[in-house]
Length: 505
Length: 115
Image (cartoon, rainbow over all chains, first blue to last red; front, side, top):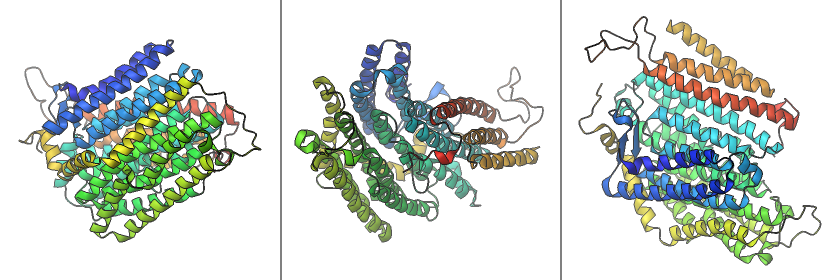
């Protein structure tokens, strides 16, 4: 057993179990929330160090050899995602210490958060398709319960849409896995990749690829499958929104990256062309949806959709630079989007509303918070020198080099419209005078300690955004190495199955 | 046997999609149940059906004698059944709770979060 690979999985599972046992001890649960997520971040960092030094790390669970047992595989992409998961987990855990109410904690807020993280990390580290399905379900069940925590009317409505479409996507995924097994007789991703390459081109591979694309496209909220997202993400407690916004759709994006670089890279003229147009329309429909909204969290939800398009664009162009850009974009986006949701939570805590027309005057009252909003907002829109500038720059440059001018033009236009949306929030929430004739009940005054707990993760994530912008070299190097690894699936296959190619047909 | 099951799976999927497209939330949940059962049945038959040949290794040998059934889809379908049971029971409770809060069974009345 290689502890570096298993620790990031065991820590959230263990923390979740311990929090469940401490059901009536909220103080202990709060401590465990910070300790568990912090531990996950450290374990992820250690794993990243190992993978960077020694290459892809593999654990055969139960010592069953590769194509027969379940493999855990930590390559650069998976590991990078694990580190980011730890970072976001820690930020959200700190934020929830201040914002999650007694009634949420009494119904298992913290145990569910740990189990959600365990599902996310499991999906990033597994090397087996059915196991990926199982981790998706772990993540989904935890997210269902988190989504309805509190039981308000809007939450119920949102949850019905969220649950239905995610179950549908799981069933499509499961059917695709079943058909793939019937065709190939294996579920180990490396083994599947090797055998798919040997199949005759009778259209079956393309059909399976499209089933996986639809299944993960729903989870990633790609056009035209994204409608569950803006209908549900603005309903739960804000810490939950932030966690979902940062991580859940990105698991779908990760799965698309994995499937369409490792298992289905053979016919990019068909599959990646579909992805390309999907990406363009995702960007455009998301940003146009956001332009029509006047509620803080709904605007941000629509922007998740439009940003997913950039990541898919990176995958769809399928050149080394484009995949690099897509990976850079994922990391940048997770940090920035979580941060924006957290800030919307602080605004709500200060003013008691998410509706733009009821907010205003925050710049006069809290200039520090306003600057903190501008960092992720301008980064999302792609302003230099923040992280979003490099993310967009790489993807767009890759688009121009690949000659995909239409989609690149859409990407540029969407950047502009994103800026418009962010400026709209800035002008309405922070800049304009506070409206006098609103009937929003004034929220309880915010304590000093509470405010610090809410601000700490926001400041931390804003610093990460600045750092990724001003000192983009290390992440660029990581993304470059990871893109190289993704575009050479042989390395993954060799690492899992060994060089002699066990389990040959 | 496989063609019969294939047709059954097809009918299950068709019925599930029909139920899911109805406006009633209860029928939506019934559709989800049919859908997951169709998927489970599909996994069950993916490796083909083999009669009278359990995948057991006789004593003193390291491989089974003769052709045996593939045990993996059965293991997979067990996992899938358990997962879909858990998720569906959540969905049933959710629908009940939603009815208590919203007091409607018509999906067309659940438009508050869409606009």
